[in-house]
Image (cartoon, rainbow, N blue to C red; front, top):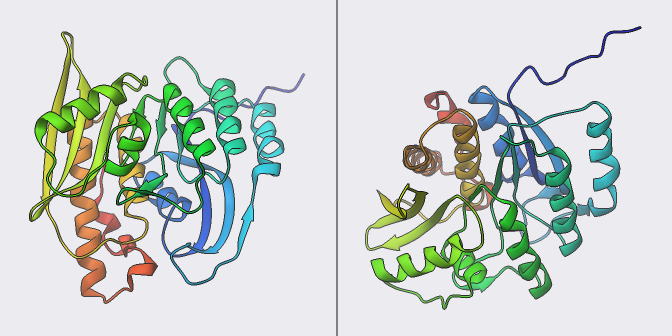
Amino acid sequence: MSKKVNHNHQKKIAVINDVTGFGRCSLAVQLPIISKLKIQCCGVPTAILSNQTGFPSYFIDDYTDRFEAYTNEWKKIDLHFNAITSGFIGSAEQIQQIKEFIKAFRDKDTIVMVDPVMGDHGKMYSSYTEDMCHAMKHLVKYATIITPNLTEACMLADYPYHEGHWTYSELEELMKKLVELGPEKIVITGIQQGQFVANVCYVPSLTNYELHITRQIHVGCERNGTGDVFAAIIAADAVNGVPFVKSVQRASRFVKKCILTSMEMDIPNTDGVAFEEVLDSLHV
């Protein structure tokens, strides 16, 4: 009788996201960052794109119809994951597929991180629908960690979004509503506070909950893929046992470093951040 092959000796993260050939986003940035942090990155494509959607035109091939056949092969070889993460999703059907994937592959210690890529600046992305937003609220119930921006946090919590200054009490109220959805840890990213960009973290405590606000001086302008860079570090750090607030702080610093380097190199905003130039500064 042949010996059964064990494919689970190394830490692994299943990353459910799109594959974009040019534009430095999604799996194109998450795979090298997670690998740099000494974890095997196993990609599950939700779509294949020639270049990211911020360009005037692009090719896209939706992978909804291939998702089940693709992931069934992983069941055959008995893969187990230390974490499962999701990013760009192309349809409400894919959200259901991701829920089934989590049920099939989640062990008792598996971390599930959902980056609810739904909108920004108070508006839902054109690729999203109300049905998808409703389905996303159910997906985050499976999450250990969620990483919404302010717009996405408001959409998930049915909380009114507004521009300008957000008070601590508003952020606290918003966070409480997100906690009710089920995740253990939450970071609301990219909140503008004058010359700073803040991230608001929720960390459970023995008695109640704790809010932590981390801030970086705002540099440059918004660039494609920075959320994917941030999420990759948060997921890998969670697997590696880095405390959540510390992980948010170092992910923010790394994103800032990527933006500054991209500005120095005159990289167009559509092309994302030149993370490759500073990847060696990221350590376990």
